[in-house]
Image (cartoon, rainbow over all chains, first blue to last red; front, side):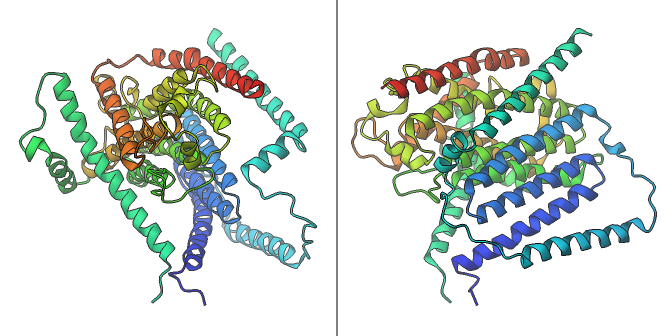
Length: 174
Length: 330
C-alpha cells in the first residue's frame, strides 16, 4: 500500500484526477446546451489528455497539446462560434425514448470490446530502445526518418493558408 | 506519519509562488498608481500608510467585501470560471521560472515551452468570460483580444525560436547559464550570434506588451470606446482576480525577457550573481512597461495589426534566417 503522502501516492491521485477531467470534459462537450459550454468542455477534455500524456513520459507532447489544442484550436472554435452567432439556437432534434438506452448499450459494448482487445493482446516488447523521446530525438527523427511526412504536412498547411487567403480575398471584393 | 521531503519542497514552492504572484499583483497596482501620478505631476496614493504603502491591502479588503454580482442574463458557469482561467495558468507559469541558480520550483527541460503553453490558456479565459457576460462591449473586446494575440504570438515565438537556436536548449536555467559572466555575454548583446539581437529584444518586448494587453496596445479594455472591455460586467473580486491575473502575466513576461535576453540572475559586471539581480532587471522592465503606458496614447486597431504583420513579423523572420545562417557559417 502506497502512502498518499508519498510522491507516488500523490501522483497516482493526480493521474486519476486527469482521467476524471478527460471524462468529465467529454461528457460536458457532448451534452451541454450552449455551444460555447461544449467548447469549454472540449478544452477541459484536452487538458485532461495533456495530463495523461505527461504521465506517459512525454512532457513535450503534453505541452504541445495544451499549446495547440487548448490555446489555439479551442480559441479558434469559440471565435468561429462568436462570429457565426446564434449560439443558443442549437436545435435538439426530436428523439425517440429508446435512443438514450441504446446509445449507452452500444457505447458500452464498444468500450468492452476495445478494452478486451487491449488487455488480451500479447503486446510485443520493442526489441530495443529507439530513442528516449526527448525534444532532440523528436526533431531529429522528424527531419530524417519522417522528413517526407513532415514536408507533406507542411504542404497541406501551406495549401490551407493560401486557400483561406483566396477565399478572404473574394469576400472582400463583394 | 512519513511525508516525502520532495512534497514539502513542492508545497513550499507552491505557497511561495502563489504569495509572490498575489503580492506582486497588489503592489504593482500601487506602483502603477504612484508612477502614473508622478508622470502627471501628481502625488498619487499617500493617505493609507507611509507613501500609501498600505493602499493595496485596503483595496484588497474593499474588493473582497463587495458582493459578487452575477447579472441576470449571463452564463453563470462561464462567468465565474473565466477569472480563474486567467489567474491559474499565470501562477502555473511561475513554477518553471528560475529566479536564481537554486531557486526554481521545477527545472523542466522544456520550461520555455511550458510557459508559452500555459500563457496560451489566458486568451481562452478572457474569451469565455467575455462571451459568458453577454455584453456587446465584452464580445467586441474578446474579438480584439484574439486577433491581437494571434498577430503578436507569431513574432514573439519566432524570436524565441531564434533564441533557442542560439542556446540549443529550452531549459531556462541552462539558457541563463550560457549568459553568465557579465553583460557582454547576455543574449541582447550577443552580436556574434546575430547583429540584430538588440532589435530582437525590442520585438520581444513589444510583443510582450501586446500579449499582456498593456498600453499602447490595451485594445481589450479601451475605456473610451468599450466601457471596460471584457471586464464590463465584472464587479468585486471577480474583477479583482482578472486584474491580478493581468499583473501576474506582466511579471511573467518581464521574467521571461530577463531570462532570455538579460542574463537572468547574472550581475552585469560579473560580481555577486543572485536572485537580487533577477529581481532588479525584472522590476526595471515592469517599470518600463508602466512608464510606456502613461507616456504613449492608445494605438488604433489597424495600427496595431499593421505593426505586427507588416513590421515585426518580417523583421523577426529576417533575424531567424540571419541567425541560422551565422550559426551555420561560424
